[in-house]
Length: 381
Image 1 (spheres, rainbow, N blue to C red):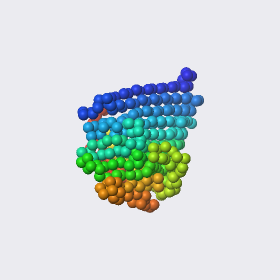
Image 2: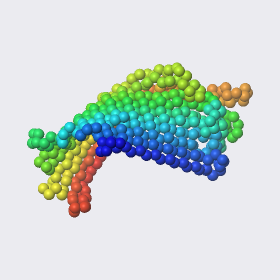
Image 3: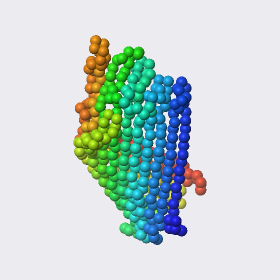
């Protein structure tokens, strides 16, 4: 480490927790485990130029809690890793009035829902009358979330322009997010009994869903101070977003990649949205003890991949059949649910938005006490 040039910080957390619920086998307690690591470097590269880098990861195991009706073998062992990294956050102070910064980071969430027994092939069986399960859990799988962001901003303070002081900020942001989620019925089928008697079979091949988005944004704002008593904050953000059905890796009955590709549907829709905001702060008295505040802002929701993931072409149909007592097999057809047929996405779908405004008056009663004398806030969607 170089004195006054390079700083390092690191941390580690270790946690273990064991518990058994009433009526369950104490030989198989639920075991919760969590480990976290964190490291951060701050580099003073030269006067006015600083670089920060960080890495965080956490590893946890959070098994489903066994109960009287759901024994250990029928539970899932959820385990995950959550690596998050700031590749670099570079800040450059050009002068007392001008600063720019660039930041690039990535977040990943990797979760597996494994059978607690370690056997992914034994089918699940549940009695619809008693709710008692046996065999494996009814469904296993995993979930991967990835988000990568790059952002750059330039801030500049300027005095006396057009009779006012200005605090400018402009910037741009590029963001890519995606998820994919395999879902597997152990053994390809699960059974439903009725008071101990075989009743139905629910079957489906290995299934996988996923979606992706790419957003490019630009924003600008200005805080204008006029005469020392009035400050007006104005800003606007422009977002161009694409929702994408990406290609995914095909999987087998145990969730392993086969080397095949399931083609996606490409671009599903495109959004171009504008998010303005306006704020006013005014001193109503010369002593500054009474202040009027007001604001308006529009907030547009971004693309949520979880909302559009279920219609991916990799989602497998689910078939339900009933026991035919004459044949002794589950041959009586009940239904097939195919989300690729039952669910459709409107290409003209639009982002949900919230318009929020507020107004209030603050009066300072003393050096450490103030109270609002009037306020109003409302939201519309």
